[in-house]
Amino acid sequence: MSQYSWQSKQSDGPGKPDRPINRRGENSEAVDELKVTLHHRLIEELDPAKLEGLEPGRAREAVIAGARTLISQEMPGIVGSVRDELIEAVVNEVLGLGPIEQLIKEAAVSEVMVNAPDQIFYEKEGRLYLSSVRFRDNEHIMRIIERIVAPLGRRVDEATPMVDARLKDGSRVNVILPPVAPKSPTITIRKFQSDKMTIEDLIETGSLTQEMAEFLRACVRVRLNVIVSGGTGTGKTTLLNALSSFIPDTERIITIEDPTELRLQQGHVVSLEARPASLEGKGEVTQRDLVRNALRMRPDRIIVGEVRGAEAFDMLQAMNTGHEGSLGTVHANSPRDALARIENMILMAGLDLPIRAIREQIASAIHIVIQIARSPDGKRRVTAVAEITGMEGDVVTMQDLFRFQQRGVDSDGAVVGAFQSTGLRPTFAEKFEIAGIRLPADLFLAEAV
Image (tube, rainbow, N blue to C red; front, side, top):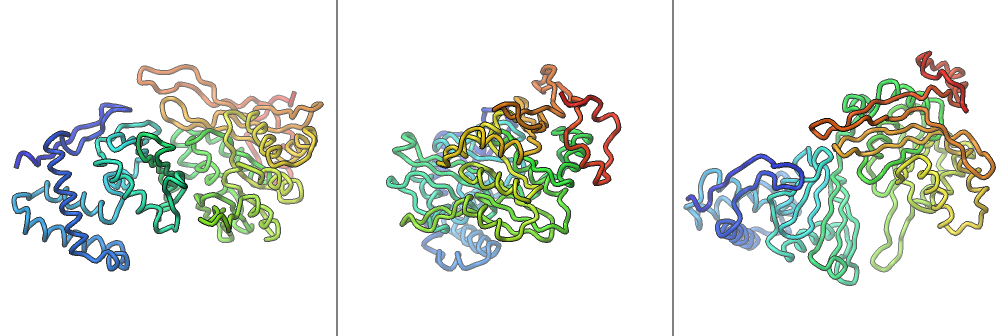
């Protein structure tokens, strides 16, 4: 039985194998052959059409029962934990995503990246690790890709080598095939987190301070327009979801996303989702279409999950025409870059507008830009909260209200620093007073420059 024994060890750190299931080599090949044999026999014994019609729990029970029967009949020498792990692997092959199913199920894993059959990485607590699990070959990866895209009516082949899809749990999937990815089919899965972090969770993890949270709560309550800016994977949507919890339950909220990720707790929420074109190139619904339509749906607030194209102009128009208190995110590395990106998106929409007119729209529409970033230690922090104060000539003026000051890195690689208030009084401070919102007396000590 030694040839089928499993072992486990702890991770050696980012970029190194984490808990190999078994030693690679002849033993591994023998186990892979057993999985293939069981998989093929189960397909012969079980009707795939009937499995698809069953509830997930019952389908799993049927596959487990079938695998146990086949093992006892044809592989009686495999017993104990080895048999259990073999059955689990086969169930994942028949019903799940094969070798990466165990990574998808692990709650602490936030992203899974398949670069090649023997190169599967995952992100955990903000750091990347090389997993010990593997696919047998490129054909094995392709079979899992087909399982992902087929239920969605999508097609991926040499003619259409790239596709964005979504798993049943809401996780986002990107697939790219050869010849565009010459070495191997590639899968990138960003897992959907069903338990979105609250503002209290973000305070506890050090993403921001209680003082900053109270200030942002006041900004949302007095209906300021807020943009959350940051790079990929910095936690923009998580922060946006936390900010949305400050919106009163009495308001009608329209969310516009591609794909849907927000989970709002209010009772009056309408979620809209963009749709790609069909195989015939028809039926596309863009975020810009949805923003325009949302204006006809009597919204109190409009939330755009990610501003990435021509919808930027329509969003600014909405903010400037009575739909205050709107929220959105944008990919950028600083608050100033966020405004430049929005400006560029409007220009790329083909609108024949002078630069100054666009910047005036931005300056009058957006009140606050929150910058969030992921530090080298894997932690996500709000690095700046900036106010848009107006225009000076052709330049949009800004001032930082809060910022994170990094002081260094400790011996464990953790970033050392502190959140600080600049003391500058925001130009909209009177709105807090009118709304009866009281912030700490020493929060804004200096006058705006």
